[in-house]
Length: 144
Image (cartoon, rainbow, N blue to C red; front, side, top):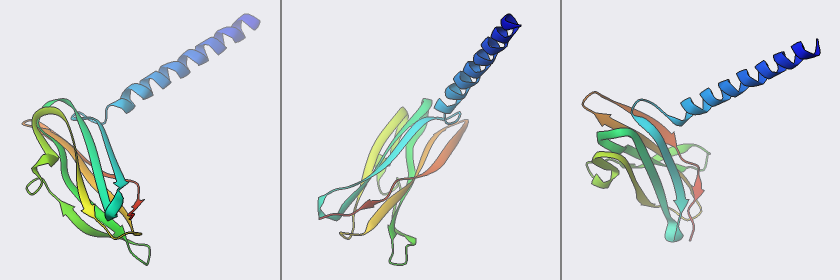
């Protein structure tokens, strides 16, 4: 009986370890095109708010980076409103070509004391397809 119980316990631990390893392996890759991505917001002096991004594709792709960044401000009623839009056509450093990764940032001059956040569309694209995700940064308060 003791031997049987030990075998069942050992098998249970093995199953849990296999499931955990499998989950970790799939969580690392975001999609067929996006391997990993990171977005962040930071408040700098003078009311400046910086939205940063770092996008890693699964391979070298024709385009990788941020397709759009929407900067939002929290109004007096507590709702987020769009106050600025950034696109690669106006900010070419948002996208890299024929690379597997790209990082960059945009800066907004906000009102000191107000809260801001960004919604960043990270993406990777090649001739066979593409993938994009909208990621919202944490809120920051513009400072002096």
